Each structure stands twice: as structure tokens, then as C-alpha cells.
Amino acid sequence: MGKVVLVAVNLGILACYVVGSGLWVASGSAWYNSLVKPAWQPPDFVFGLAWPYNFAMLAVVGTLIAINASVAERAWWTSLFAASVVAALAWANLFYVQQSLPAAALALGLAAAFTVPMVVVAFRYNLWAGVAMLPYLAWLCVATSLSIGYAALNRAA
Image 1 (tube, rainbow, N blue to C red):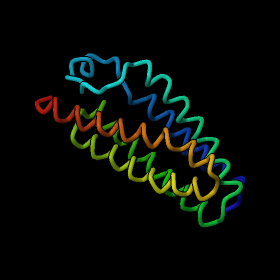
Image 2: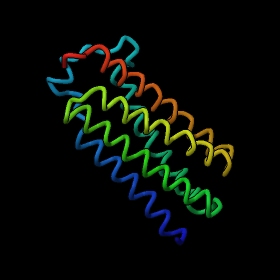
Image 3: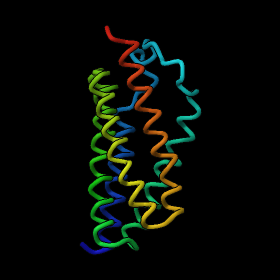
Image 4: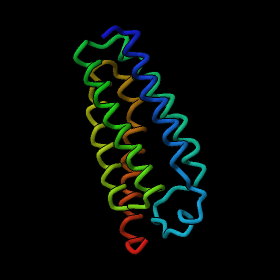
């Protein structure tokens, strides 16, 4: 697959992530506001700061890998990124739409697990690309712990 096509595929996956998240995440809904929140949940403004960085970093690192990394690393990145986004969007749907908190926690855990080898690919490509990916991985790990916390605290929900 050509580099330009891979850049387009990476940005297309990211666009699906952004749009899907926007469609399903409803943190202002009455149902969400009625949930018992884990004590370690950061304030709402942190989410507003984290996601623009995460999406921008995924665009930049994914584009750099699509253009400059080896064929194997490009294929590995694209496959893992797609799997991670599918799992993250499954979380959004399971959590906010289907209100299935345990299944949502599992889906987000999978998104984080798929992201670990993405970070490895980024580090193999370039030190700074790997470093840029670390906040996203950390964010997914924190979000997974929050999702598990929601599931534990709201068993009857």
C-alpha cells in the first residue's frame, strides 16, 4: 500500500474515532450524571484538554509512521490503530448508549492493550514519536480504571 494511501487510511481511522466519540459520548446526560463516580475521576476540564492532544498526536505520529517507517511497522501500526479505535468506540457505545458498564470496561481495556504495541512501534520509529504516544496510553489506562470503577460502583445501573 502506498504511503499516501496509508496516510489517508490513518487519518480516516482517526476521523471515525473523532466522529464516533462525538456521536456516542454523552457526559452531560441525566443517566451519566446519576452514576456514582470513582473518587479518582479528574475534573471535567481535564477531559477537554486531553482529547484534543490525543487526537492531534495520533494524527501526527500516525502520519509520520505512514510516511517514514518500515513496511512492517506501517502495517502493524495501521492494524493496531484500527483495532484500538474499534475497541474505544465499542466502549463509547457500550457505556453511553447501551449502558453496559462491565462490557464497556472490557472494551476500553482492549483499546489500551492494542495501544501498547502502537507505542512500541512509535518508539522504534523515533524516540519523540514514542514519547508523544505515552500520554495517550496513560490516558487510556486511567480511563480504563475509571470505567472499571464505574462498573463496580454502579452494579445495579
